[in-house]
Each structure stands twice: as C-alpha cells, then as structure tokens.
Image (cartoon, rainbow, N blue to C red; front, side, top):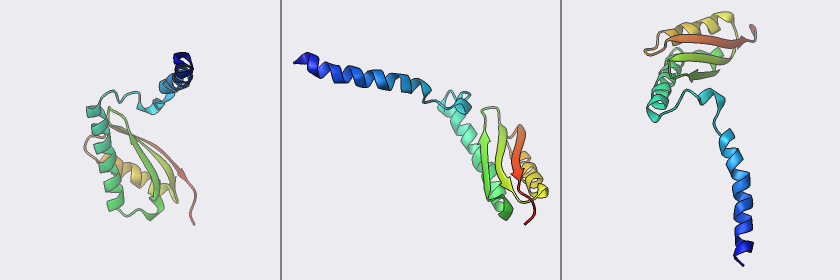
Length: 110
C-alpha cells in the first residue's frame, strides 16, 4: 500500500525539481537579494514616473528594466527618433541611474 502512495509523489518530484532550476530568469541573475531587487525597483519606478510626467504620448509602449548596478534598459517603440532620445535623456537624469541602454525602436512619423 505504501508503495502505491509513494509512486505518485516520486513522479511529481521528478517533474518539479528540473523545472525549479529553470524558473529563474536570465535577466535576474544579478538580483541575489531582496535589497538589490528593491533598489532596482525604485530606480525603475523613478524612471517610469519621470517618463509619465513628461506626457510622452508616443512613448506609451516603453518598458524599463534596471540592473543591480543602476544600468537602465529602455525597450519598446516610439514614433520619432526625437521621442526615443527624449526618453533616454529623461532616464539619464534619474538619481541612481548609472547608464542607459536605449533599445527603443522607432516606428516612424504618423
């Protein structure tokens, strides 16, 4: 009887354990502690707040990611090159940002 109960548990464990190793996102390798993650989140929130305050309607589809060292990556799309550059310059003025990697794709004037 015990063997019948143990078999499903062993099968489930065999399936779950390999998945746990792949659960961590590659971009989060530098976030080893809660303190680092909170620091990253604060910088990301500050950048997003500054971008929103400047009302960039053509920058509505921007994504901001921050590493533990304060490096910010901007991705998404913009209508003009000027909008993309404006987003980059806004991000550079935020306290705690050490560098900005602007990967915003410009879709062209509409």
